[in-house]
Structure formats: structure tokens, C-alpha cells
Image 1 (cartoon, rainbow, N blue to C red):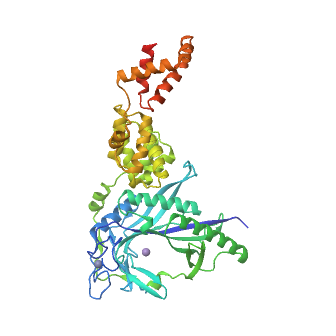
Image 2: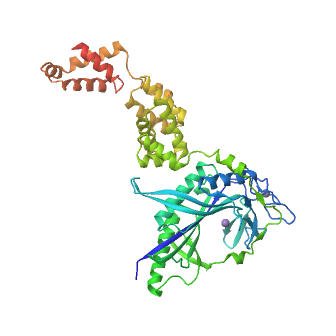
Image 3: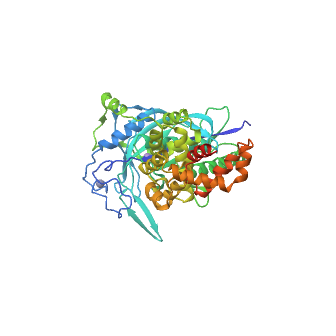
Amino acid sequence: MAALEAIIGLEVHAQMSTKTKMFCACDNDAFGKAPNTTVCPVCMGHPGTLPVPNAEAIVKAIKASLALQCTVNRENHFDRKHYFYPDLPSGFQISQYDFPLASRGVVEYEISDTSGRIEAKKVCRITRLHMENDAGKLSHHGTKTLVDLNRAGTPLMEIVTEPDLRNAEEASAFAQELRRILIAVQASEADMFKGMMRFDASISLREQGTEKLNPRSEIKNLNSFKALEKALQYEEKRLRKLWEETGGPLKGDITVGWMDDEEKTRLLREKESADDYRYFPEPDIPPLVLEEKFVESIRATLPALPGEVKRTYVELGLDDKQATQLINDAHLRSMFDAVHAQTGDAKRASSIVLTQLLGFLNAAEKSVTEGPDAPALLELIAKIDDGTISANAGKSVLEKMVATGANASTIIAKEGMQQISDDSAIDTLVAAAVAANPQAIESYKAGKQAALGAIVGWVMKESKGQANPQKVNEALQRYL
Ligand code: ZN
Ligand code: MN
């Protein structure tokens, strides 16, 4: 028997970061709000209400489509997708079936090793992107279940890929690149902790060299990259074992759930087909016709995409890992950009932001947003560059900025860390050093240049690192 290979495709749901919901004017930001407070008769599915598509959501979905190199379709329809569930009060979701917003895109992504070095460049095709509304949320308390409809009606993009992924690692790397793209074009905040991006992963096996797609197992509702990876690894192993036992693939499509704590999948149902949803055109929303001029005007607003931005950082001299750190975190990136703009030195900017600042933040168990902001960092750098403190003292000032939240000048004044550059003060220190180190002076006079280092070291120690080393050297040369 030929070796087996895994064939994986993803369906990704991403919440759009709009002011209001998909079909009503309710606040789309329900985070931290009391249950059932950002609702209205439309998103609660009351009979007789009329949905009105949200223009901002359509624009954001078009941005995402263009960034995924999809063709935005001129003719768009909304359809009702019927299913019964207590978090879906109308009994149907308004989605798009045979006339989706966009089709046939492509995402280029990279596989990196643990040190961030690129191992391979890959491509995953996008089948389609369509718009729909989210359902509410259920929470289970003992024998009772509560319904919160704050999320009901939140605009979603559903992004479906071709089965181009071959293992869990590729699926995760692709999903992370997709997330960066959605964030870059501001279509979604894609905050994983808030459940703004969720994955359904389909996997099947086939003998290498064959083309036929076998029945698949669809793993529902994975909420993190880690869950996506682990679930796919588990399911691939399970399907391989099953193949060994039965001599072939699954007999029909199945739907499984991933149980995070047990790290296993569990059979939910034999998969439903499109027929089961009884799709029909949403009668309350007329077809949406998108003028090419309109789509092109949106294309003109697209920012540089993460892959492109990463290349510019690599060209500045950063390594792959550093460049990836920057494109993964908009806040970090804006800090780096600010420091780079002020100093004109990418190496120095990466040392300050990615080595020192991140190091101190990690040690203090703080996130990037909890540390000093860009203006605070620039003030510190200005103090180093105008000679107020030494570069070395700058490090400990930065550490204190992270720990206390105070700004550089406050810390420098409070700790008396100003660099000593005053000529008479330096002369006094040098005179004392010469008097205290007669042996070093003798060996210097005997021709040992290196002996000077010992004297400079004595001055630095005596001044608690505050003497300007360059001035000390100059004074010493004069003195001798
Ligand atoms: Zn509403
Ligand atoms: Mn969907």
C-alpha cells in the first residue's frame, strides 16, 4: 500500500470589527457588558422585523477579500440557512449561499522552525469568503442553560479554503497568516481570547499519488491555534489507525468535537449536507450589486500586507524571528517604527525594543501594552543621545520604567543617574584614580597600553558608572 497523506481544509469564522451589528443598529462591542443588553427586536429574531445590511461590514469584508487576493463578485445574495438551536431565536442564520461576496483567492505563508528561521514557503487557495451573522451564546449552569443574545447579529466573515493543507503545522501557520492579514486591513480584531476567530477543520486521508478526495472528518469550533494543531494531529492519527483496521477511508462524512481537557475528538453526528439547511433567498434583503468602481475605491485604501511588511524589516537587517515578532504585534511594531524613525538605526531599534524592552516586560510578566509607550521610549533615547545618561545606565532606567511606569526623566532625577560629563569633576576623579593605582601607571609608562583600562575601570566603579567614559579617557590621556 502506498503511504497515506492527510488532506486538510479550513472554514474560518472571523468577527468583523464594526460599530454596529450585521443587520441592526445595536452596539457590536458586547465585551464586558451585562447579558442581553446590546439587543433589539431585529437581532432577537422577533417576527415582523426587517434586517438592514451594515455598509461598514460590507466594506470590511471586501477589504478582507481583496487582501486574500479573491475576486469580489458583482452580484451578491443573502440567504436563510435554517437550523434550530436555542441561541438562534429566528431559527435561521442570514448567510450567503450560491452568490457569496468573493471567490478564488490565495494566501502565501511560511513554515518556520522554533528559532523563527523560514523552512518553507507555501500557498493555500481560498475557495470563498461570505458574510453572515453570528448566533448568541449559551452558558450551562448545572441543569439550567442561560442564553445571552449580545453576540447575536455580530457580523461574521466565513472564509473557506481549498483542501491545500497537508498537516497540522501547515494549518496553524496558514491560520496565523490569515489572522495577520485580517488585522492588517482592520476587517477584524481577530482577538483569539475573545473568540473573535474560530476554526472548523476538515481532514481526510488518501494514498499518496491518488487525486480522489475521501469522506472527511470535520472538527468543529476550534478557538486557538494550539487547539487547531492538537485536534488535527489527534484526528490524523485516529484516521490512520482506522484505515489500518478497516483497510480504507471513512465511509461517509462525520462531524466531531474537540475536547480540550481530554485532548480527544468525539463524534457529534454524521455530517449534515446543504440540503438539510433548506437554504432559500432571504426575501427581506434585495440582491446586492457591487459596482466595480466601488470595489476599486476600496482596493486603493488597502495597507501593505504583513508578508510585504515583513520583507521590508528583513531588508532593514532584522532576522526572520524579529520581523515576525513585529508583524505579530501592532503595538510592538509601532514602538519599533518610532525608535527607528528617531534614531535612523534599525539594529539599535531592535536591540532597545525587541531585546531590552521585551526582556524586561517578560521578566516582569507584563504585556507590551502595560509597558512604556513610544513617546516614553523616545524620551529615554533622547536622554542617552544628549549625554544625560550613558547607554548602560539607559538599560537600568528602562528596566525601572517597566517596573514602575514612571518616565525616564523622573527616574534619572530620583536615582541621581545623570552621567558625569563636567570637566572639573572628571579631572578630580582621574587625579584620584592615578593616585590610587601607581602600579597601573608604571606599567602604562613602561609601554603597556592595556593598563589604562584598569584606571578607567576604577573611575567608572568609583562614580557608580556615571562618569562619561569617553571624557575619562580624554582626561587621562591629557593627564599622562
Ligand atoms: Zn439588534
Ligand atoms: Mn458559517
